[in-house]
View 1 (cartoon, rainbow, N blue to C red):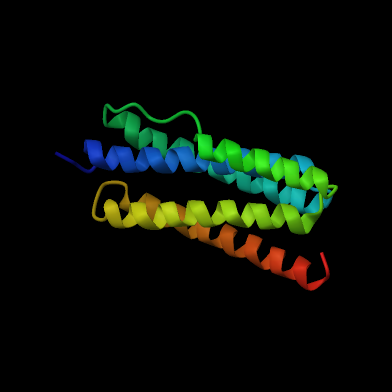
View 2: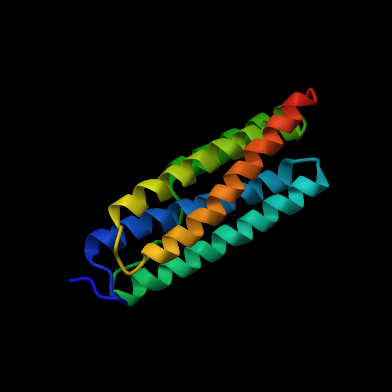
Length: 156
């Protein structure tokens, strides 16, 4: 039974999915920061990485507090995406447009994972936290998308 501080097993599983994708996102933003030539983008990527680390940490508290084992690593799919971003960015010399396109793909994935989880765990102890985190994730997604479009519009 789920209470205000304890999650049932199914809810903990959904939250663990979010922990995993936040870890993937943080690692992806760090990888992007390492390869992009634009200092402003590098700083922004590092800020998003820290935000995603914070999200994962906060969600781990809910899972651990429920007696379940919280995730502590990302997914294989996230690792493949980082590898692909690294390969593409090296081939293009750290081009901001390429890095932003790959970052936006990752942002699509985390946004959709939050949207599904919020439906799956609506009305649970973690719903308000997910809504707040989703708002931050959506803002990041939209910013990355807009930056990507601006770079494309400038011939990048």
